[in-house]
Image (cartoon, rainbow, N blue to C red):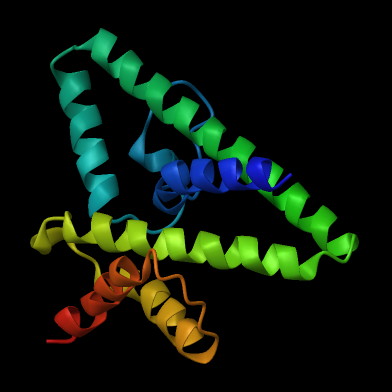
Amino acid sequence: MKICISFFLILAITVGFLAGCWSAKPTDQSLNKSTVVGQTNSLDDDLFALFNNLQTTKQTNNLKLLNNYLFESLALHDSADISMTAQILQALREGRTNELINVLEGNLNSAIMAFGSDYRNVDRSKRDKGELKSLQFAYNYRTKFPHDDPKWESRITNAFKLLDENAK
């Protein structure tokens, strides 16, 4: 069970960023900015620029590959989300809260490290300081509820340094 949960946590983290980028999926096999509901960001703009370039230059094979990749990634994320949610609910109903807390603490550590690494690779001109709100929330949580993991502590601390760097 722990291996299964860990696998889906890693899987969810790997493709999780797509969920933040899309608040709705196109209903057909073509990507269209007007079909996306909600606020867009620089990632959306870059994706739509790529999509429009492929469409304008009539690179239909590459356009199809891009669409396939996006929909497969979204389906993979949805599958991981379904599995994770069902497993969390089952663990809660079975009273395995300590086990669940440890899994979620590990998930938070992984997400903090991944965000820190990914955010540093985003071009400074495209960084959205609003994205740091989740990191600030995690920092506040970690201050209140420490979860020491010496193996990852330096990477987590390094990610939290983004808060100080962007305050300047």
